Amino acid sequence: MKKISINLNGETRYVHVEPNDVLLDVLRDKLGIKSPKSGCERGDCGACAVLLNGKSVRSCLVLAVEVDGQEITTIEGLSKDGLTPLQESFIEHNAFQCGFCAPGVTISATELLNKNPHPSREEIKEAIAGNLCRCTGYESIIEAIEKVAKK
Amino acid sequence: MPISHEFEYHKAKSIDEAVKLLSENPENSKIIAGGTDLTVHIKEDVIAPDVLIDIKAIPEFKEISFSNNVLSIGANVTFSEIEDNKIIENNFRVLWEAASTVASVGVRNRATLTGNICSAVPSLDSAPALFLYDAEVYVKNSDNERVISINDWFTGPKRTSLKKDEIVTKITLKFPKEKTASCYKKLGRYKGEDLAQVGMGVLVSENKEYKVAVCAVGPVPKRATKTEEFLKGKEINDANIKEAQEILATEISPITDIRASKEYRTHIAKVMLEKGLKESSDLLSGKEVKSEPIL
Image (tube, rainbow over the protein chains, first blue to last red):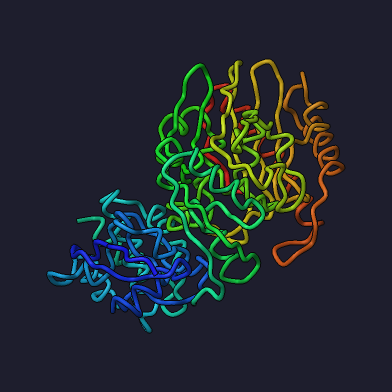
């Protein structure tokens, strides 16, 4: 067991982990952060995406020990002070149905808009290419992001 | 999904520390950078190392530098960092284009160029670029450092000439001496995060020398040297392209798998050769080029 510290959604959290503990499992089971989801468990579906030092990563492919001393942001952190304009837009466009992919898509789109506040439709598609949605067929997701990008 | 076996984890602070740790148990240790391949393999019990050596805290491994016409990319430089680098975007176009087609943003933020060539799957997007720019791989163990040409790097599917006690420190690429233009062509089943069914880099130089490098059409990525030899000194016209396509088909050996049949891959490689040669030649002569998708 090793004690690591994570700046999680703006708060310093300490947690004991084994080298083989996966970040996604530690977030969900030890730190109570339930927004990242376990989907494919091999980096293809994007459901487990979190921001690590501001960049989206697949938390199912990161070991918890690797992020000792680093900064992690999840949906819980993004919406700490209420929903973001992006989240409002997702609701307005009815972008998600079952919602399983929503946290991952939100993380990817947030990263995109932070880096490039006015992306083109193509850039939006590329940014969320690694997030699989099996309900709404992406169109409403893309439109919701586009609306925020045009503001 | 929990990992079913235990291992030790070390975060090396320097190259010396990393090679020393590796020398203690080379058979059962693995180097971890982005971990986008390694962690999958560990989770799925493909490999079960006793020791993981994390190289992400080694400062030199984050460096990208360009001097004396040599681009140097540290072992922990990610595909996102390559994509965001203006020197690479402007001078090493094929590498830049290939980097931006690897998997998805969330993977590229973590996956490294060095990890890509160490995993050495036949479809690796970065390989054609490394062949076109005469890449060299710098490796080190606790006693020695050596340099391996990219031509000698890939020895089989998921096999390289890296020894178990060695780590890659950096990869260098040479900026071509003559005026050149180049492009990377990739076909996946869909645009987005798919693996290449065929990938091809084409580089055309002013003195009519051509370089063609392919991935996903054989056990290892490689230069299409016979095709290059045929094209040398020739104009890019329909007759020459046609002949070059037939020669290319003889020096690739694609397989049929879940992504595509060997016949389809061979056909697409020919299409890519034509588009790649025309696009690069147009770029070289200063024409406005809109990069055409393969399908």
